[in-house]
Length: 440
Image 1 (spheres, rainbow, N blue to C red):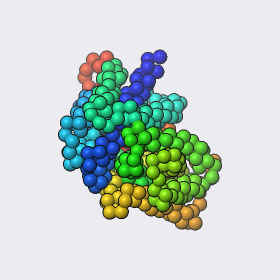
Image 2 (image 1 turned 180 degrees about the vertical axis):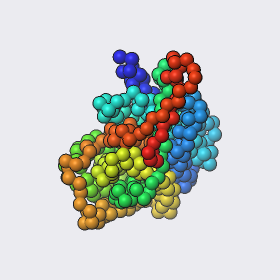
Image 3 (image 1 turned 30 degrees about the horizontal axis):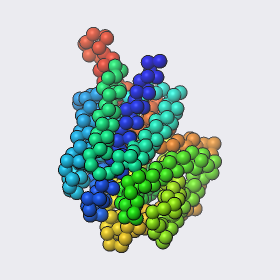
Image 4 (image 1 turned 30 degrees about the vertical axis):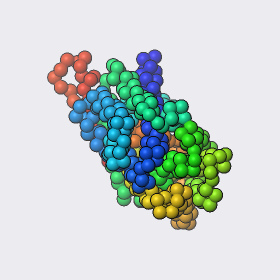
């Protein structure tokens, strides 16, 4: 019973983080457009988030090793709260770029620490269930956070204060825990040679998905604003896209378990490219057609990266899943950082709908490269492949460790515990050092 309470307390902390993150991400894009920030500045705000998130994924594990999980998490939640409030007090495009990078850093660190606690209480039997519930809760909380903007609006202080409250409240479930400190966090490292050798399609898909998703996530709210949608309309637009993408992961993922995953990737990437081109050609005004097209876009685009991860895992050797998925995560982060900057330039020089020229180009690149690779390499038999696992939109190295497909990696780990000359009842609070056989 105690372990169940701990798990649900961690779920609550994660949900509050995702609620605040969903609200803040959408809010800054729309409020920035209302403040007449340049499109380049709005794109760089998205770039700042991605740079901070990747930096946090790499460096926060070192901070945790020095000061411990609870202190590190408290610092991340506190600084994350401060940055949201500073966004309200310091309305400046350059300031928001810097603050967004800091927010991404803290968000990655806080999410990784929550996931490390979940990793500690999950065993091989419960890992799949815990991972599925965790992904579902995060997707739902992030979507509810975006929808909250339809109630709070974008003007005034209310949306910023609510985002700050959710961040600081996320601290409570872990700050009050009596559990022993988890093991040190996993950090993401890029083994590009191993990733390309294992699955060139997955490497290309990770970068292209980053370019498309980063551009869409940062600048699609601006597109909606330019097309005449108000705050509630933009929130609904993103909720439809997010829900369609989350629901689509299950049927398309299960389909990819039965046939060549690259066929599913080609269909999804081509579908995303077609929808993007339709938005460019039609350039719909606020109304049902825009909601329909955004829903179709989310339906096709959002499952693409998780299926690419599953495809890479099909060809990974035992114990290599975490290394490969961690490498894909960093490549995705590079795309997420570059995409908004490039898309903002096109939108400035052409029109707001040029955002979807970028997404169409990179989705078409995934479809074309996957089709080409199908002529070079055969797919693994369905019986030899691990089942597809849904994934959250915000993936950290600890998310990868929590993934049930990482179980074979865990079997290869060697855990070395220090046994200092202290009373036995205190030894359980000492953090063990974890020596791993690879990079993640």
